[in-house]
View 1 (spheres, helix red, strand yellow):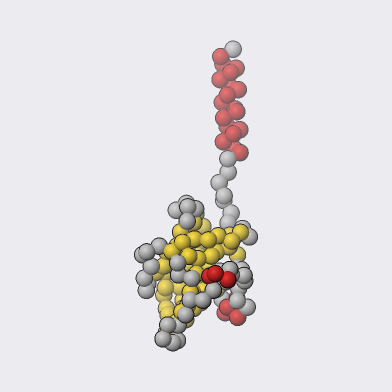
View 2 (cartoon, one colour):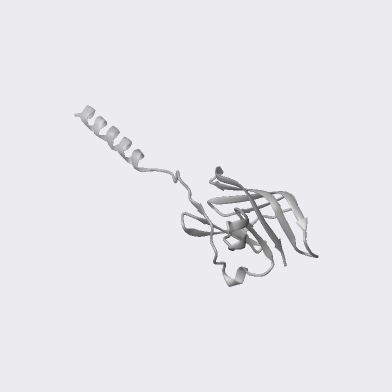
Length: 139
């Protein structure tokens, strides 16, 4: 009788573990709408020149916080104090976004073009997406 109970519990445990699936596929998407309270000084990144002309953002920040879109959901992440000229980092409980600036060009007193940068998105410390991006920033 104990053997039957043990086998039943064993298979129930295996069945329950099979149902617990981590988020294996992430669909990072562009977006066009930005909340009014984030407009103004900031930085925006695009996948390519075509997206830049169409204002299809892959990343948008007002420097204190940033937006990304994953699985058709807008995700708000806060800026970290370690942001500097070579990289920026934003995070929340689930996601971390790191921007590594490779080539920038000053276009005005406070404005700049990002000719090349690498954007890395992590989910619970695991890299789920990494791409070269372009964009700009300033006030």
